[in-house]
Image (cartoon, rainbow, N blue to C red):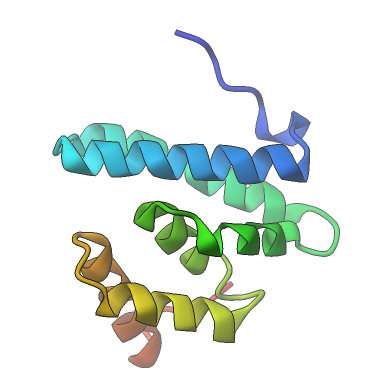
Length: 124
């Protein structure tokens, strides 16, 4: 099995591509009901997001380019990851996903919106 490169060694563009790739793999894991696989991927996704956030100027805005991605899981993850850097656009995307007929992303987006509205979750 090929090891993934360290996120600290990747450019912002490579991190965005990695974020999208992980998100597509998460979608596949969801379709296969592979919870442990999804969770492993989630950990990698969090490390990519944290790396972008920790770079000078908080480079998570690079993930905005994924808002038009064809995969709903990619778009959902990008919206959640950019709530702090682009709250209006991220919320609009979450609302669009929540109104779509695509499960499970529709439910996840709806829950994210509910948690924001109830003050349970705050963008960081």
